[in-house]
Image (cartoon, rainbow, N blue to C red; front, side, top):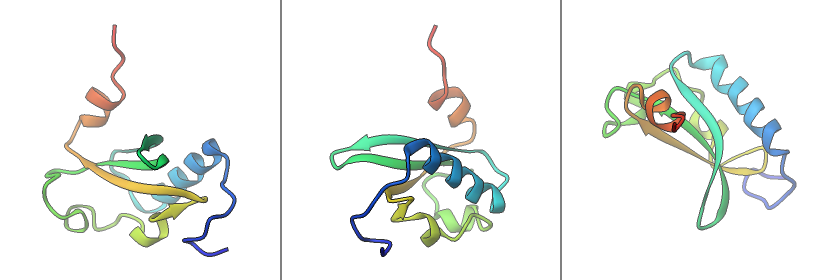
Length: 98
């Protein structure tokens, strides 16, 4: 089955866990891997904190895993990489509302 084919999908938690392991092989910065959705359905998202989200990704995170190992699919799921500013993951994305 090719990378772009419509085939079987890994269970969601297995896809998250395996992608976390892949990213951790290359990158020691702050990131999170989770499922979200868009108009096309479920999407596996890799959220990465970078100094300047408006600047090119590869210039800020040169030791990130090879992008085309992760996108457009991982474990059969569509994937996206989202750049966010420092501390966004802890203070916004993972925030627990009181």
